[in-house]
Length: 180
Image (cartoon, rainbow, N blue to C red):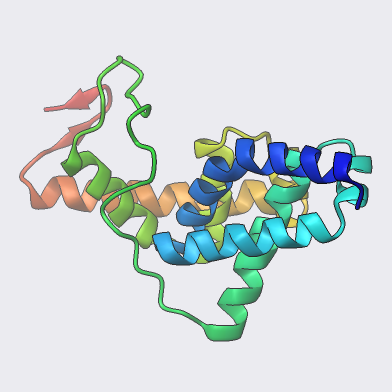
């Protein structure tokens, strides 16, 4: 690669590194594995930077590499995923009402994600955390839009069931429109 391409890649990597590590963390549940996945993804992107640039959307291209790298590591090692209680860069995550999430809510989110399989977790992270469209999620996961819809539906059903069980365990009764 030329010096200009090296500088362009360096700027891209520095700008996108935190987001790709957060994506990898959401997929792996481990900060160390997340950094390894992101590093391997950027190494692959660097090796074919001209092709990545020509693709038109380097961010989506590298996101796809991160997802594929996670899948290949998961298949190779069948590593047990252990989501930790601290999401990277949570300072800017707020509720719709403008309130920041507390540690109990973050732990509840991680517990809920832990109940999902890797594919459903990937769909939930891409669709609802990264706010990608169904088509973008399908492209990132190399599957059909219908698969994204069905995986999201199943994941949300699992999360709802988990939330309802948790609320019953804590003596809350869920009704439409809120808690009774």
